[in-house]
Amino acid sequence: MKLSHALLFFLAPMVAVGQSVGTSSPSGGRGASSSTNSPSSGSNLRGGTSSPSEVATPAPVVVAGPEFVLEAAGVGTCRTGYEPLVSSWQACRDAARTFPTDVIGSGATNHVAYFGTTINPRFVGNVPRGCFLSMGSRVHFNNGAGGVTERSAILCQKVEIAVHEYIVVVWPNAVGRFDTLDAAKASLDTYNSGSRLIAEVIEGEVQRDPHTISGQEQDEGNGFSKYWHNWHDINRMIALANDFAEDESA
Image (cartoon, rainbow, N blue to C red):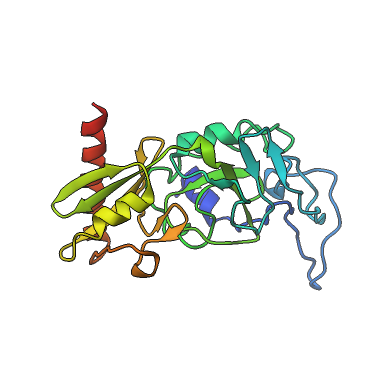
């Protein structure tokens, strides 16, 4: 039975960003370089292929104009003035395409839509949140919570580019939309019973995972009077926030 291209891709060993795939000789050493590279040889951060025995130097931080930055592999967070690009997989794809092809290969953005509209359990906590470059030179979008790995480089956008809004949901109603997080927290704080949360809206898109809001964990320690039972509870409140956002923009 043939596996789909997407499944084969995700079953393949992950390759460090900026590194090529190595092959081992029977004695445990690395094999000799080959002058012919197969498609499975891997590609480095700059989009070029390398021989199986070569280990490329990790690429430096790359900035594409004033709007986006690709951090070094293994950093996992954005520098001051930038934030993860988490609004949508389409925005992730378009941002990645602003980089020159010798940084991100021309085919690296062909599969951003894979898992772009769902939360992939393999991504959650294992790769950066939002847009990232991984597996040798492919761009992906993580809807879930982020993590840090030497195999992925996070793609960030300038803070002022993204428009943030916040919807307060107290089941079974969305009770308000706010321009600042502090105002949303103050509204949520007036409720002390039932399922409730703040949903973040970035560039008009309601974020699916409310555990982190504008870089803050949504918990009591950060001033969030939230409460939910489980993901079912979260999902139905996020659906309310989506409906509320659509009604207000109509």
